[in-house]
Length: 258
Ligand code: BT5
Image (cartoon, rainbow, N blue to C red; front, side):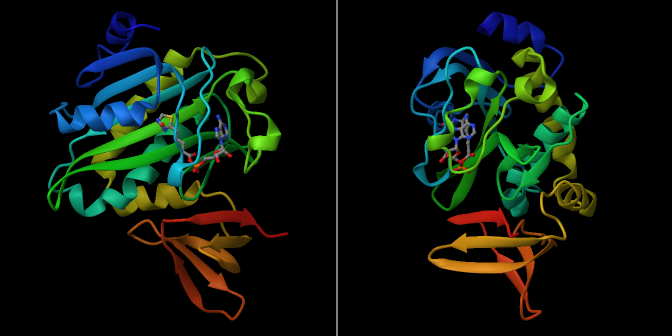
């Protein structure tokens, strides 16, 4: 991978500028800095290796060289998109699931930001915002996908079992093609962000939909039936007393409840 091959490969996509790094701390950090310096809408940062890749709440995300996709896409949200920024995690996760479906796989979204194959995490999404005073000027969509077996960290450091596309397909795939498919899907889905159709697609792809789950959040544990997602992207559960409960983004850990 290099900047000129990526520019050529993505010449038919309406991207902003592209920056490629052999090694970087975190593509999201670079993207946030670039966003604050005026990066265009749909500018892309991609790295072969991340040495300080981040998940939510400062958790580590591992991107060993030559094995994974790690990239950040900068969006300049329009006035129509701004009321729906909390749906962007769904937009990114759906773009990933659509690209994996094209390979004949059956991905699911583990709310809020994980993509699973066969109950194992193959990809994660990290959304971060660049502010100007009270206004969000840019959104950085960070995406990590395990392409080859070597991308998956050892089980003792994982909070949830991991996998790669190579593990699931039985053969290696070209990460540039996966990247192109994710970007195309995201660009195609973006105009639907405010629609019910988008929410339906998001809900249909949810892992544990209609099943009992356990949610750990800030010292509290909740068991309930996963009913769906409400318009702001929060999760809707039915608890053991029959009450409807909303789980918002934050320090949340979702698990199947056997
Ligand atoms: C995420 O956070 O899943 C978001 C991951 C986003 C990574 C992208 S890569 C490009 C961009 N630049 C960045 O610096 N980040 C974004 P979270 O749900 O908090 O999951 C983090 C947890 O996933 C860790 O605590 C590990 O247990 C696990 N993990 C780390 N690396 C993994 C990997 N390669 N595959 C599967 N699980 C992993």
